Each structure stands twice: as C-alpha cells, then as structure tokens.
Amino acid sequence: MKSTATVMIVDDDPDIREVMTIFLEADGYRVTVAGDGLDALEQLRSGSRPAVILLDLMMPRLDGEQFLKQFRAGRFGDIPVVILSGHSAAEKMAKELKAASCLLKPVGADELLNAVRRFALPCPKNDVA
Image (cartoon, rainbow, N blue to C red; front, side, top):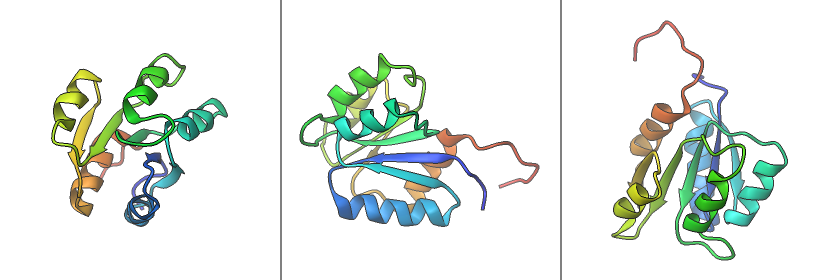
C-alpha cells in the first residue's frame, strides 16, 4: 500500500470504471467514480478533492472537453487531469486542453498505474522504486 491519495475516474463506461477501480485500489489508492462530466462536477463541488482525475473525452450530458473548461474555472482547477480516450486526435486535444497527460484506450494496467503514480504524488516515502 503506497498511497492514500484519491483518484477520480470520469468515464461513461461502467466496465472501464470497474476495471480501473480494481487496479487502482489494489495499488493502494482510494477511488471515486463519475459517469460523466456533470456527475464529476457535482462531486467536486461537494468537497471531494482527488489527487488526480482520469477523464474520458466522449461522454453524454457533459463531455470531457466541456468538463475541463468548467473544472478549470473552479477551485480545484489545479488538479492534474489525465485524458483517457480511444479517439485518434486525443493526444492533440489533450495538449490543447492542457491536460497533464493522455492515455489511449485500451489502457494497460501498468500504463494506467504509472500515470497515476506520476501525478497523484503521494506523501514522500524513503523507499526507492
């Protein structure tokens, strides 16, 4: 167990949310999930502050791009956001949206955990990876 940092997964696919939650919890993270951008904004407004947000771009109600625009204007706009997308233009879009990183779906467990470890920044420990 390396961290008690919270990771928010914002994705409209329940299977993807479930698989990512399993990997992240096994690595010691607390996980919150949202089915779309509106759900995520409501959770953030209620005081939930994750260390990093994993964000799908294509979702109903409020997509990733619109979520990011509203999110950046809020009090938690400094939280790193990692874009998750199967869309070929996702990396270009992630740069334009000033996302911390971009992972193309399907995302492997190692790739996912490496990105979260990089941005979640748990309390420093004296061990070497």
